Length: 328
Ligand code: PBG
Image (cartoon, rainbow, N blue to C red):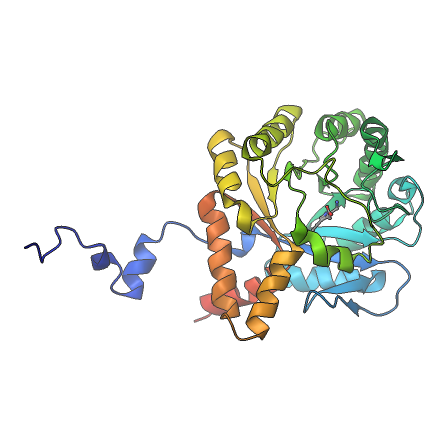
């Protein structure tokens, strides 16, 4: 009867120093991107009820939020605007004095070295809430491309560091690249929301942006059942000139992250979305999980699966936790 195993994994797990020595995956504050919500015409920060600890900020607080993140070591922010100048086509996004342009200028002025990224979409700027020009209860793909080109050129002129198109418009990366290049912005990278699923986990985000959207995005976002198509979407964006790819949401799509990682050499981002954030916050508040441990385990899982960057509402909190560790 065999009683002595011929190999013992436990030999390298015995002490925390040994575990540190053989750890395969690491998380750093350099991996994190902080999303920030900014609403026009409000005077005080408004807490988002479904996302504990997250606010819609007035424009005059954006600078201090960006500085607070920078001082924690966060190198990149992703700006979302909540517009009060909505119309059928989202034209405020290509207004040089519109909310998107103003947010970029404020953020860059507060911290010139912060990587300022915009979520380049229309849904927070259209009266109907769809991610582009509406035609027959669906977005008109090609008409939206022309508007996206106008939007990104205005963002670039306002000083944006990176463009992040999230509308799942076919051909969006190629259209953006050519518009930027034509206006001498060939140095501005594109982080495409390349593999974005039609997910129930965006629920709290819709709260956050006060969306009156009642429709469905199933005609342009990916069916969660489709893994091959999910890979094809990201490879298509790579072929069109994307500089960074993304999978969104994150936790339940680790297989997709790993698959894209195996097929592309580009940096890859995972978006830990609003519903994932809210689930952790509520589970922690209910005493079901240790928040810090559960969040750190989730972040390491993204990285182990192959993500280089993580967009998360937890970014500031994680930075605090990481900074406290290195001070010991
Ligand atoms: C806009 C956009 C959405 C999110 C990011 N950009 C909403 C959507 O596609 O419905 C979701 C982010 C989140 O849930 O945290 N197109």
